[in-house]
Image 1: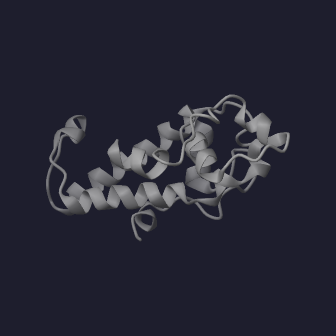
Image 2: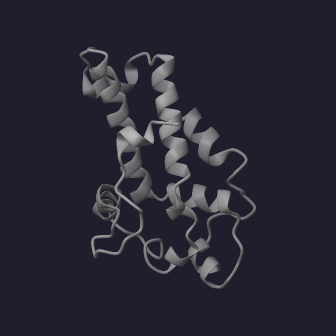
Length: 148
């Protein structure tokens, strides 16, 4: 959680701006600072639900590649070596830096209302909404996302 706080929230999310009707405010032309918008959008329940699953997959993959058997139900009870912490930080940073989070044109569509978990799973897996609208240049590739 420290990595997520450091990379997404601390010094980026402005409590004075808050979360009230952010997308409507963007549609009306209000200038919301990009770091705040990124923190807000990445924190939406249906979005964070999906990308936190990828953090778990990165952790599992790390242990598997080290040849260490793990109990997935106790994943966060294992001691993480520094290289794993680095991979998690790089992933969160690379995810944060995707252009989708600052695209204000998406305030009417992708971010305009509450979507379900599957909606965002589809976007991350394909780069497109379930309706076929391209919102990412390409699907999320976890191996690429853990590279600096």
